[in-house]
Length: 265
Length: 265
Image (cartoon, rainbow over the protein chains, first blue to last red):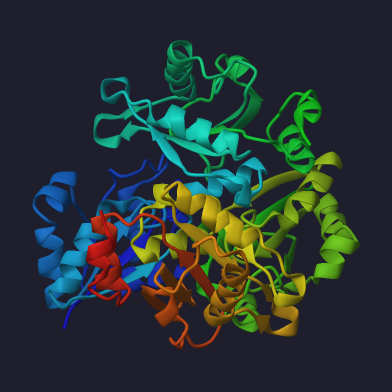
């Protein structure tokens, strides 16, 4: 009976994979990779193929989602198949359907975890993990939604921080920037005026977490608009109630202004 | 000028480290490890030392926290020092103080991320990441607190799931089990009677996520008490409003009863 192993690629490039993931990939009968759910900025498929001494088949969104991952499922029926996925494989729910499909066909599934952008961003920021509320994604303007604004507001009322992932379409090389994300939120604030995302709200922009040159900057949201975070991917944190130890971390790790000490408790 | 790199060990054993983390450790002038913030069930320090061809110094909680990590700081002043940390280094806030200390002394700090228990548990469960509220830790009975109960209630009112980490003291080999965690929550429910953690609440127990033999079981909380999750570490998820795709995932991956389809929306 076949086996399908979802292996997390972790962050940034081919060196984000774990030793366990590398071993499973090297010993697999067939290896697939998808690179559309997240951007690994310095990744090279050629270098990964050299590392695992194997041909790796790139699968598209259409193949995995519209055609139900038929090529992956067929390979997994016949032997040990690996699907390489950026980050930690099931942090995005994209592949849950494929996993259910495989299990229903009697294919054993396993997960080999990788570093996730979510814990990496939260950890890099120096903010306390247990002070984050619900996570949200800010969509591109053409998919406009007030949900992120409302989730940030709901978290803020509870004193909690919000991790805002910024929408991306890797295939089209389109990535929302910190500035664009903030501007979309400010535009909703102007309309709704609930005082949720004002220029003096504390926010953190992050870019390329897990790479050799990550960018991390905490500031009042109005000032953050002017900051150049460089190349994608970008993410954003809207800060709720700031603990004084969190303020120290932001000042030391994220170039936050010293005034942050005055808003911390 | 010196450098301090926090390297995540990821999950379960020495094969959870990323290739980037391995490379940094191999080329470091001095390598430290702490193994008290989280349990890596199948980890061997000897095997890791063989992998990196280096002597690794085990540092205690006392050394890192009460003595401000003086040995690590001293090594980082003189060259490239690596501190190996289970999971993703800053998901627990334990080492934030050490990092601030280092930065203040002019030591450059960097993070090489690893798989975190938090994204791994959420991903393994098949639940949607953006439907989780605030995370909480259920403490040992001698540190009794109603906070976890209240956080679960707050999340539940918003339709959100709660990841409940269960307390541990690795040095004393003490680990709260799923059963003990649930019993502590039931005891608060009996006193407060807010209908937050009733026997028909949907809950998920997980054990040894990231190992070769993880355990994952979703059921009504009353039934989950009887399930044997085996050796530590254990964690618990209290489910809020269940989406029908989440119910399918729990039935397929976590042995949940088919009745879950009736409570999903």
